[in-house]
Length: 445
Image (cartoon, rainbow, N blue to C red; front, side, top):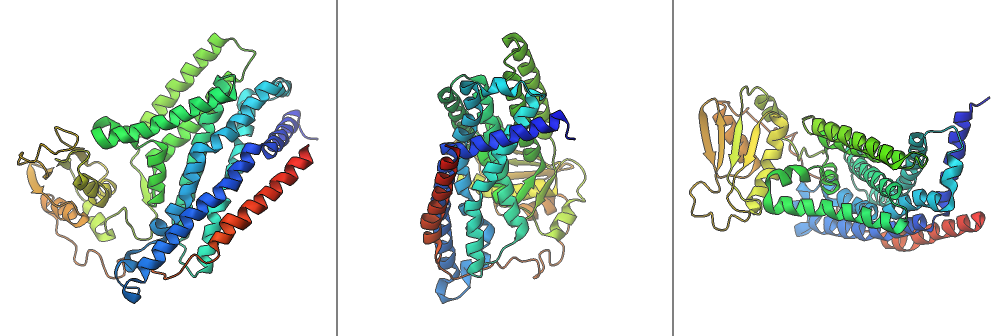
């Protein structure tokens, strides 16, 4: 005979699922995400096909094309838009609706803690979000029908980033709904926090410094890393911590029989523990490059040689935050160096945010590499320039054939058109979802 707790969990899951299916906001999310994914997919495949057939062959830029950056990243970007502007309303309705209808009092009569109730609500919302990701996943089937290449680890990396982003949105929305008494207020709070993370990214691009370090843990930056095929332990652990902390805060404030002062104390404790956990997660250096092109890493031979470096490698790059050369240096070379030499001390130096009036400074534009009293100065911002400077300052010999022919990524050029994509995303998907939605609404009426 099932225990009362298990029966209560099953009852609550069924109730929350029925409320999700009865939610018009959820069906709007499902209908809209299809055309959003379709627009991105059609644009990406069109550009991919045109560039792959440059000069009538698969030569040129087509050799360097990867479905990860050419197809998957833009197609699944629809999930980022949906998570920012549509998913919060679904999550808020599921929590705030219980406040307004009085269902929360009925839930509290079952032998379940507020934490258990939030876990069930979060699980239902995550299942709903996974269903929504079927829209961009449809592009995977279309791409396969065109004869396109699919690398499973790359695809799973992109999907994992957007699933994690959905979890962050759900945690934020349910927390806002638990803290406020009206869904409109919760929506404003959620949108304010979302815009706040965008402002952090903007401040990081202008000012650098600690803004830049903070921006690495915003949802936008997190998704970007996954879309590059880079799985970073620090970002993943920090995101999971925030999700758990958000659900815990919501659970605290859904205990309507507890005094506000006691809930405030519990909230401060949860926030303090979460802050310490995020600070600890930010110090974790593990990362995994699952991109087939190894776009986030040096060659295997170069990495093996760099791992023999002992001592404190220091890199000082004299570039302003808005200098485009700084972006080239970061994404082409230094991000790879951070993976190969995790304890490297890398810092950007500048007196202004644009660097426009620093050109008279002889040191501006230079990158200094220091190790054991030796110093190498370079102005090259490519991955090869960073590698050569590091090997020079460390007195290492570049391995012969450091990137063998079998390691060079040739890409998967495919001269194709997005055949049938418009009909699927703009016709079949909305009609099918709308039909299922109307049937579900009629069934629950």
